[in-house]
Image: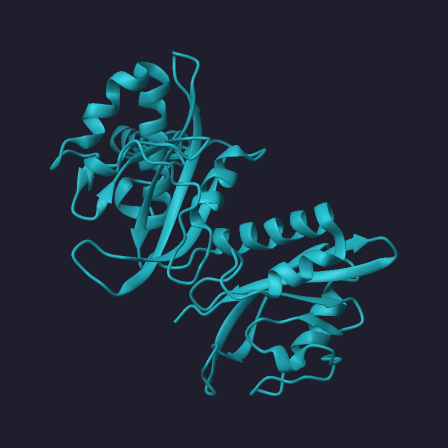
Length: 302
């Protein structure tokens, strides 16, 4: 079969093909990196701390004065970079230079949460970084607000190891916080065994912030730890329904028969409230001796 076309139509077809080909090439070569405007607050803060860590790795202690300059990219509004040693000694604290040279290992928030130790532990751990959530007054305010701080371990050219960090007030809950919280609770259970449940239950611990808390049950649905609703401890929740009639515990345990972890949503009351709201929960199973436990935490997206 022979196909005929005049010069103009053939030229148009070829041009169209070239344009389509160029578009395909451009689309296939596009980067998956998000534009800065699309980054979440969480991602922006992590990037901010990572850039400060890179500067310390390159310039060491010589860059500390840069972090203290008010109005610079490192210190403006409520945002600033701080630098500690892994022993808790504070080397850079832009809001109050007189506070530099103090050891912060014993620092606690209003609820007695040992935030100094938690910050050092996060940077000293295997990952070398992590989040700490606590209550702290904003500058020139007396009442505390929730603050989320990201810290990262870094080694300067001098060979000294520091932790560098920054935090934001009233940061919107990110799913990564929930996953990290559950994994940290599991790590504690693996380290000290079932006695970790007392720590997870204790008020003011590292596993409680905003409306988020860690809960633990066994694979049969018996609630072992629930700091927000202690009356549920000791009960079997397999037949528990949410306000929409969803057997969410039953569904959760059924999913964990074939998976190690999962996300699910259901209607549940915030701590101290009676009206149910949508809650997203991350749960993960863990084997301790002959027992299979389910460790979870969640957040309310509203």
